[in-house]
View 1: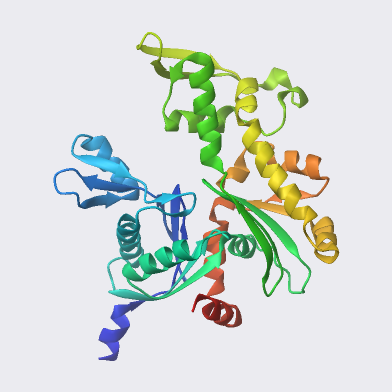
View 2: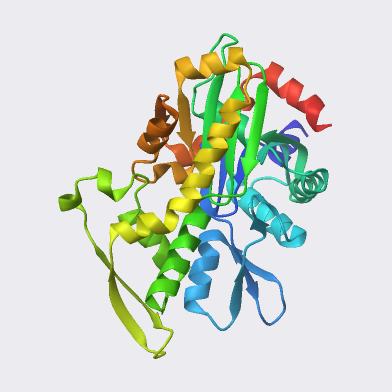
Length: 347
């Protein structure tokens, strides 16, 4: 009997359920899932055919038979049923099909999540088979995962730039001091590039092309401050909106920077406003220790240097920044006192 029961209960799971990507880590085994937050629906019966990478592969093989959906938007659930099914499949995959349910799941959430959104996430996790769900601020988890929380009560600050949201948080060893969330992230940079090319070049490109252009050309610093001789151009293909034919054109780093500048400015202004609202004691700690960037958006070229220049603070990018939240969620299981406190908050 003891053997059969142990086979039903699997390891604790840490989940970063993002608008763009979902990470799942298993306690003791590390990250086992790193896949897109997408679901493929079978057009014939409306059922979920696949999730993540398998969904993208299925779309490529049978584009007329399946349709892709994203159950998350701006870091929160927009389609509860699809989110629950996606989570269930990811959790089953993380378990390796060995068990029927998980004892505990730690899930990162935006700091400005509403009670309705929190309830939807909580229900989705439980519907996916979790026995107990802990919903914890992504800002705190990012700081924990980036290993910047010290053993004393001095404050640390993290800016987690995700796909759809940017989380700004000041934390100490034992608690989240304050946090702020803005609904801007890497996807907004992609959209700005797409709209710029559409408006000024009458060329319609896809989201994947916009993301590639961002990775190849986008830079947070103004072009005038860079070595322009070293800058490269890139070619893109799209649909001409005037002649309705495929077309190739060349894009320069300067216009890409101009396209994304309003989004960067909004994020930096939010960080500045957050700093201005801190107490003198916390502000002093941050001035001494600086800011740590996490999230996939922090990998934008020269982003750390841009923030450091504008805010006159030390800024560094965490090691493996895209995985900071899920690593932080996994680390919660190793701290019984911390888990107990979040247990009371999640009740």
